[in-house]
Every structure is written in C-alpha cells, then in structure tokens.
Amino acid sequence: MTAIAHKPARKPVRGRDIVWMILPAIPFVLLLAGWTIYWAIVRPNMGTLPPVWTVAQTLWQITASGELLGHIIASLGRLVAGVSVGIVTGVLLGFLVGLNKRAAEFVYPLVIFFSAISGIVWLPLVIGWLGLGPALFIFLIWNTVFFLVFQNTVLGVQLVSEVLELGVRTLGGSRLHTILNVTAFGAMPYIMSGIRSGLGFGWRALIAAELVGASSGLGQMIFHAAEFHRADIILAGCVVIGLLSLLMDRLILVPLERRTIERWGLVTPGAKGA
Amino acid sequence: MTPTVQGDKIVVENFQHIFDSADGPIEATGRVDLTIPAGQFVTLVGPSGCGKTTLLKAIAGFIDPTHGRILCDGAPVTGPGRDRGVVFQELAILPWRTVRRNIAHGLEIARAPRQEIDATVKRLIELTGLVGFEDRYPHELSGGMKQRVAVARTWAADPDVILMDEPFAAVDAMTRLTLQEELASLSYQTKKTVFFITHSVDEAVFLADRVLVMSRRPGTIKASIEVPRRTPGGRDWESFTTDTDMQAIVEKVLRLVREEKTAHKKDSAPVALEAAG
Ligand SMILES: Nc1ncnc2c1ncn2[C@@H]1O[C@H](COP(=O)(O)OP(=O)(O)OP(=O)(O)O)[C@@H](O)[C@H]1O
Ligand SMILES: [Mg+2]
Image (cartoon, rainbow over all chains, first blue to last red; front, side, top):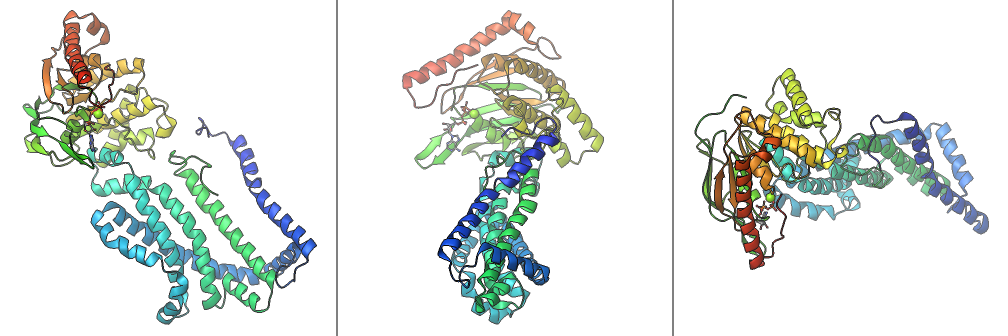
C-alpha cells in the first residue's frame, strides 16, 4: 500500500471505497445462492430450514411491526454495557500486568484459572447472586471480553520497543508520561485486536445469556421462536446479529483504526482481518 | 542555552559492564576511566561490538554498571534524565507523533511557552532540512530523514550533555556533511558537552576536541587524541580536508583503529567485522 500522498485525493479514495464495500459481499451472495439451490433440491422441513425468501419475509414482518427494534435496543444496551466494562477492566489490568513483573506474578495464575471457566458454568450460580437483571448480562459479557482484551493488552504493552520509552525518559518524561505517551500508543494495535475479538465473543455471550435470563432481546426472540419451531425467526435473528456485528466493526472500529494505528504506520492498511 | 558550567561534566570511574546471558556472562566492556570536561566534544571510535553503545547507555543511565560508577556534574547517575539527551543507534522517535510534535516533545514535557516551542521547532526543522515535512508521520519519511528528526528532537530539549550513537549512519553523504558542520558549530556555540560514537574516522576527527579509540571487545580506551580547534566558530569540510595537521590526526587515528581490526582478525573472534568510515 502506498503511504498517504501529499494531499489525500478525494475522488480515487471514494472509488476504491465502493469496490471495497462491494467485494466482501460476494461470499455472502454465494452463501445465499448455495442455500437456495440446496433448498430447491432437498426441500427440507420448514421447521428446520426454511428458504431464503421466507426468512427475508419474516425479517421484514418483525421489522415492520417494531418488534425487532425493541429486541435490538435491549440487546445493544446490554452489549455496550458489558463490553465497555470488559474493555476498561481488561486494558487497566493488562497495563498493570504488562508493566509490572510483580503484578504479573500475582495476577497471571488467577487469570489463567478463571479464563477456562465459561459463562454457562457461572450462569446458575450468578443468577442466584445477581438475579435476572442487567448485572447478570454485564457479568456474562465481561467474563468473555475481559480475558481477550486483557491478554492482548499485556502482549501489546510488553512488545512496545524499550528504546521508544527510554528516548522519552531522556527528554525528561516521567514514568507516567511515558506510559501515557509511549506505551499506550505502542500497545494500540494489540488492544484494538483484543477489542475486535471481544466484541464478537461478547455477542455470543450476550445471546447465550438472553436465552436464559431475559424477557426481551435478540437471544430471547430466538429462544422463543425455538419453542414454536420457527426456524425462519431463528435465522432472521442470526442475520440481524451478524449484520449488527459487521456494522459495528465497519462504522466504529475500522474508521478508528484508519485514523490511528494505520495513520501512524503501525499496521499496514488491509493486512488485518475484516 | 546559557554556556554550561566549568569543570568535569562526566566522570566514568573504573567502569565495566558484564551482561548476564543464557550462555553465561558477557564482558561488554573492559575497565574504562574517562573524564569529559564541560563543553568538550568527545568522539569514540572502535571495532563493532567493543562496547561503545554499552558505555553510552551507562552514561545515559539506562544500565546499572557492574563495576565502577558514573558521575554527572559530580552526582552519581542513577537513571535517565533530561540533562543527558540521547540520539540512539536505532530509531527512537515516536511513530504516532508528527515531525513537529516529535521535535517539540521535550519542550512540551518541560511546559515551555507555546511561542518558544514554535520558534525552536521552526529553527531546528530548517537546520535539519525537514521544511515541508512538519506534519508528516515518521513512517512517511526516509530513513535519513527520520534520523534527522531524532537529532532535532534531542537538540530541541536543550540538554547540557548530548550522547549520540552513530546518529548520521543512515543519512545520505551530502546531508551528512551539512549536518556534521552544523553539529560542530551548534555544539561549540552552545558549549554543549557531546559524546559521539561513530565508525567513521573522518567524522570522529572532524567533530572532536578529543578522539577516543577503543580496543576490541572487551573494549578499553586505548588512545585519546586531542584535536585543536582552528576556527573558534566551527569547522567546515573544505578547510578540514586541506589542513595537513588535521589529516595527520586522521591518519594517526586510522592507524590505531586498523591495529584493532587486524589484531581482531588474527584472533578470529566470532564478532562481525565492520568497515570503518
Ligand atoms: N543486552 C545485552 N545482553 C547481552 N549482551 C549484550 C547486550 N548488549 C550488548 N551485548 C554485548 O556486548 C558487547 C558490546 O555491545 P555494544 O552494543 O556496546 O557494542 P558496540 O561497540 O556499540 O558495537 P557497534 O559498533 O556494532 O554498535 C557485544 O559483544 C554485545 O554482543
Ligand atoms: Mg553500538
């Protein structure tokens, strides 16, 4: 990739943007085509696999009735809360451990121990402790996001070149100044990567939690549909979750990366996964 | 930028550093004693791997010496500080700061007034030939330009002592000549104490008040050669290359360095040879 030229030319960038938006759709189109062909030949039971157009119709119905929007708002609220708590705690503890050998010795065994225990295991206990309220969702999402962000942050902090930090120390920078102006920036590619996986796995944890402990939300919508063998609603729910996750990536993470780690040449544009 | 105090700026006493590695201790340097008076420009030449960078890092306060001690203005060095600026052998400017903000960094830390920062940055950007690149990020610059930013950044912070580790190695030959002349006049005018490592004997003699030659690893200082200042304001390459006294010093230093290389070859020590200058 050529570095940003003298003045970023507006027109060509726009043209490339459109191609960039269209090309990734091809695998999705192929997937839909495969599904349609399979359905036309095999004619599976509607309760297990409905055709594409039925799912599309259902999606339209629940959208038009406003039902979907209510679920989306409920789920997004929980996701944002849980992921935020996960990112903040993961980054803070990640810095502590990455910067301090002593802290690492204390915290690491604990983290490894608990990272192996999935949310499902906690669920029966945590319902007892926290009830079926927002705290339950936040905990279960945190339980996934935290570990991903933490591990990535530790690695990122440890990989920041020491010479960058020493250089700023010789300019008179305090340790805190150096952490905020060197380590925090240098660790960003890894932190971003942790946040990206954290968001994806945060969705998984959220839907799982909602299957059990909610009266609204996309997970609840899917759970409810399953009771009535409405595969069309289940698939519509999957489509919505996938699209929302994709949108968050494209509208928040990708632009953020463009303006930061890509702008600074810390990562090569396009080298990361979508 | 007031002229600095009289007396000994840097004192290295009975210094030696030994690294612990997986294969046992590595003697990075031999015993080194060195006194640098305030305002002196000292250059250091020696075979690759002889311990030049290790000595510089100890003076900078990055490593705790195994033996001996290091004093700056009479006080033991315990860590890095803004009184001792460093231009590193590897690149150390921050990728997330533009050229301007990298150069301004030291002054920002010192909370200098805006106008002073702007004026200093402007002057150094002109001096190092970076005009027009003020708002670029380092990854958009060439290797030589990045190194010039590193020099400007250290200079802008205005430390009493400047430690430089082959700062011009990645700069093109033409720019290097200009930078060397500018460095000579700047440091003489501002009476800075400079400790400058290089592989180029010409560069070492051109810049120095005193050239130190280090023996091969574990390196000790085997010779110290005074270089008289002809013109008080600075030096230029034209008069340097035609000055027979200067050329005699170059030859002398070259001979001392060559001795180390040939001795080194005979020993067939497993350290890479690097051409001087
Ligand atoms: N962190 C380290 N751990 C172990 N050994 C080291 C370390 N740093 C340097 N050394 C060893 O110490 C010796 C001196 O290294 P130093 O970097 O001071 O050499 P130098 O004179 O600056 O060489 P050059 O001219 O190639 O830069 C070398 O043999 C090197 O292998
Ligand atoms: Mg070196």
